[in-house]
Image (cartoon, rainbow, N blue to C red; front, side, top):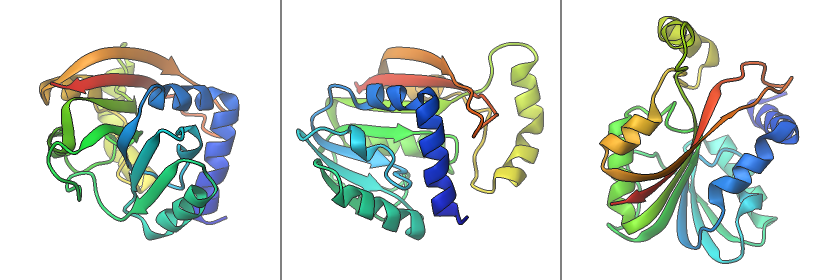
Length: 203
């Protein structure tokens, strides 16, 4: 099983075990021109309504091809583009919402990424993030810090499991609207990371 097929299988299994409901909440109520960062194979596409136009950014060529196929099967208007989160091909203040699911863990610079989100978003536009976070309880957090270099070697996709996206979003100048806590266990993904669904506004 190649990376694309494995990713599709993993998404299918974790969604079946409860993750699908959180994906739906991530984009609930959004409309207009949206940007999705790190679209992968297009797992989020089924949750977009007909009232949005989505530009989905995916840097990996194979994943991008799978996402393009998925986009053709959905009723929402979705174009899949090559790109990275730190440099988006959109004008200043031109986007109604930015959506990302488990992306800030693997970007090269969280600060540059969030600054780029602020640049392309209209004033008071929405930022929606679903991110796994550093554990807040002893000894989870310190252990994640200690083992993060090992985790980076194992996952091979640049995923850091000890980042703190809520504070980073606030520090970047966004206004936090709500933070919802989740923790899922699925046999397909035994590492049950703590998750945060972050809704914020471009202040």
